[in-house]
Amino acid sequence: MADDSDIEIIEVLPIKQPTTVFEPIPIDIPTTSKPIEPTFPDIENSASNEPTSSATDDPKPKKKRRTKEEIEQEKLEKEVKKIHREMNAAKNAKCEQFLFCYVDRSVCHLDESIQDELTKLFTARGISEQITFVDETYGMGKVIWKRKRIDAMIEDDKVKSLQTMDKEGCFMHVLDDSTFAHMTKTNAFHDFVAKTSREHNHSRPLPNIVVIGQSGARNTASTSAALASFESHRSQVRYCKNAVEFSYLVAQLHRAIAKSEKRRANEEDVPIIDTNKGIREGTQSEIRLDWWTRMLSHVHRLSEESKRAIVRQWPDPIAFMDQLTEMPSDQAIKMISDLMCTNQRRIGPVAGKALYCMLTSQDGDDVIVDA
Image (cartoon, rainbow, N blue to C red; front, side):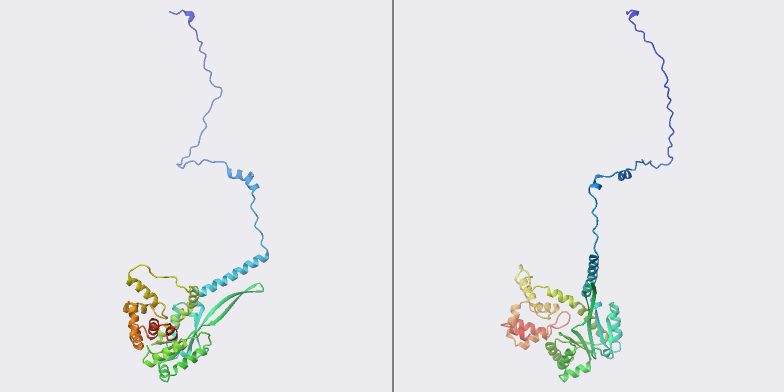
């Protein structure tokens, strides 16, 4: 047992209370359920006030001040481009609006409803301002067209728009059926077409002789006279039974003439050599059919319907050539001319003779001279 002297007595001191008392700070707790958004110091404003090294080292380059001459030159270029856009529109989307049709009032005397039908049709196509009825300004019985052309020219540092009205080569001369029949019987039609072409005053006249009141050629004399005038003066004889057909013909010619300028421009870009060489693989009949179809595409004024009818009737061109050489020329041309197409139209004597000369000519002279 241990002695009392070995026991260490530890004195317990009293606990002193802290001199400072921490009182709880009241906190206002929001009653809404919306979360509290923390607030941060305005870093952007403080950063913008302090100069940065990038702003001082790399300042933005100042825009060069243009001279008065440069400003004027830019204005001229804008005006020229505006006129060029108008020129392009005259060849593309708005080509019909830049073509003007002039109808002599004597044409309206052949049928009282012609003027109303023409006005109604041109209004429906949105070109009511492009047709005008005149009193023998361009000749009695004439229907002509003029194209409005626009060009830009810089003169005295100013852009001037030049506008001209150029006469088109295609025109109409309207006759009644009795006058046309009298001309064909007396063989005066050829001289009449020649005189009408000279009076048009154009380097390349394209006369269209329109017969009102007749649905087609009534005899062989009319057909022969039409073919002879076509070979000499490139004239077309067209038949219109009433005012509705005539107004539709005028409107269609108006659209065709309006689009002709763009079509001629596209044809000038076509290469002389045909790069399309046709099919290379296939059966003998398929290759022959492809070659025969491409050969027919070189016949002048031969429509797609006529090509399909010829290929369907004579699928072998070699056998067809042999058949034509064994026949008299008049009989062979008539056989081709009388071939009926799916649109209930015949091939015709002009295309029939051209195809006959192309297939039977030995040296090519017949194709150039006769066809």
